[in-house]
Image 1: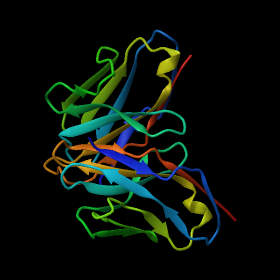
Image 2 (image 1 turned 180 degrees about the horizontal axis):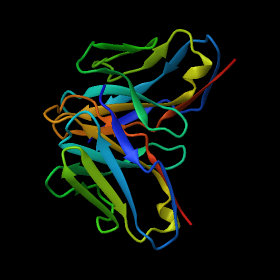
Image 3 (image 1 turned 60 degrees about the vertical axis):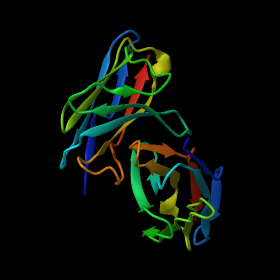
Image 4 (image 1 turned 135 degrees about the vertical axis):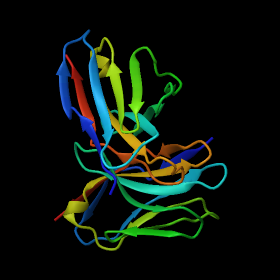
Length: 117
Length: 112
């Protein structure tokens, strides 16, 4: 089946630093990837939709300068949390949809736990 | 707009009990419906799906039927196991927009 990986799985950083999270589709091409944020015991909040070769589409209330998204290839999207602060601590999950399949499910990565000290 | 409402948790059951987690939705058009499961510290895994009315999705003993007349997609399992303890998310995919909408999740704990 389709596999999506995320790296790193956990990261701890100091306040004010930037952190990059990678999302890769391992055995399929993904023209669209999604980035979610999940708070403890809560549902997934869609942050942005990442389209290969174009700018990401951000959801209302998500700061695009704070959360930089790059989808440089059909198998890789990155989320960079710039100047991270403790309130950015969260579980970040990406998902990918296989190219040419609008009707199918998304395949989710295992998530990245970000802790900002 | 689209929305998904699912049964509030947490739900605690004894092993071999019957499980129902309710899910209702509001959507324009004809969405696809999904149930995902999330184990502690992990991402979401697709449990089952249904793409049109009256379809029944099933996997690992879990079932859900796409009911257009009641806009529901309730998750059921006849006999739960301790290993089924997880958070379950109901979701819909609006094929026009290409985005998924998730319910708030229901935490299931199965005790031996």
